[in-house]
Image (cartoon, rainbow, N blue to C red; front, side, top):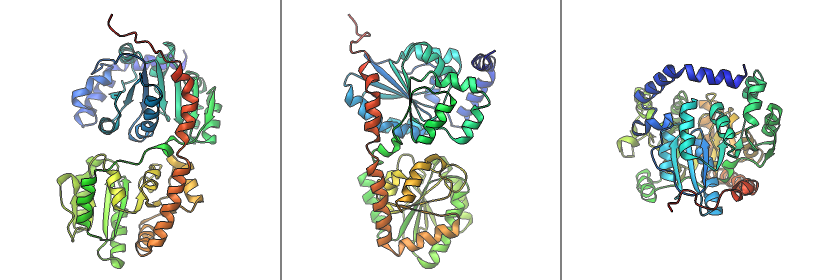
Length: 431
């Protein structure tokens, strides 16, 4: 029995367990209650007429990487619609706010054949683009079997993933062979994909370099800027459990030198706001929560921005930013978002998710590496007292981001034959 046949058999007989798992996710708020059936392949809207490109992005980071590509594709083909699938509620909310006209979001169906066939029967895409590294075997094979051209964009594969896939070489080779084109973030990842069996592999760089700056509500910026009233401020962005404690320790150390310092915390998962509040309150810190519309007063020490889609606002309020996920084995998050918005960047040692980006920033002296609360506090304190160093770091980071902005142009040039081959006639129009 082949690996695919075994996998399909397991996902078939495992239907009761999969349904139970989905119901638990729904009960825990991890599935959208009104759109839950999309996870079983049931569409919640009509397929638009004309050519349809489908882009699958696992979650928030991948979906945001795809936004610039979507804008370029829609400009290239004015008759095109784009379907974007993701698997998380958070990414769905962000896409609802940021997707341009002629593009729309659906939840990706769970990888069972009846559900993905229902999904593909309805949407019948003319082109499928997968972003980064989430490989669903049934969905990929079924799409390829329908002769729908498939491309992998911004592909990445870690050393750990390579080691795992090499235990099933035939299985991963069969998956990768479904893609007519694989575009990777780095030459190293291109080599890894070739070694696993991908056929046509090219490296154009990281599509995240080409992302537009995160949006901001100008009225909210004015209000919060007035509340901060010129106080020294720094930001801990996209933090994970354990990192908020490090940030709080750093805040206490910084406060000894900079008594009126304001620390902003934007957790990676906003629903952790109450949990973080309890942690900070137990330390005796004076704090506010954005989700509760708490104001920033002169005595506010920590401000927890536990809302969705406002990271661009807080990068603009603070010109010193620690990028979370880099101190607690999460691989780090995208530092280019901060680089585009004139921030001096601080990161921990774990930058695996953005290794090439971090290396380039480090080589350009455009970031500082920290390792714990003491080094974080020391770096922030020095930067708060040295605006010239902040300007030097932020300008170097902005240069790195700007230099690589053209990645999307290279990607689009390679995808052009796929877009040109899409149908121009409208097969769904009524007579």
